[in-house]
Amino acid sequence: MKRIILPLFIASTLAGCKQEQAEVVQSVDWYKENTVERDERLAQCRANPGELADTPNCVNAEQAASLANTSKRGSLDVQPMTDIKLGR
Image (cartoon, rainbow, N blue to C red; front, side, top):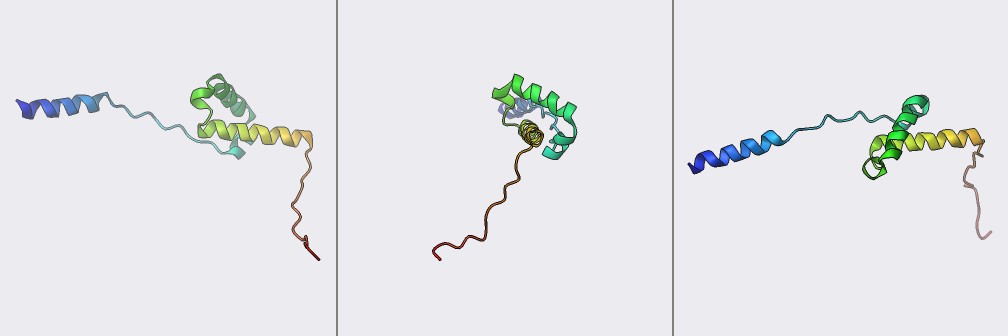
């Protein structure tokens, strides 16, 4: 009897487990080029920030939106100074 209960318990536990289909992660460059999808993703992320804010697609969409807004403002391309001689 004990030999039957344990396998049945394990089988019923595993039957309840279901793997969710993995979501395709898009890159920042992809979101920069696909503005409609970026806006849709941002709307989803902002509607449920507690659950989605740290997902790769939300982070990439936010970064792409930030880069797109920066380029619209005409920001300066400031390069670091590398040839500084201190103490001379």
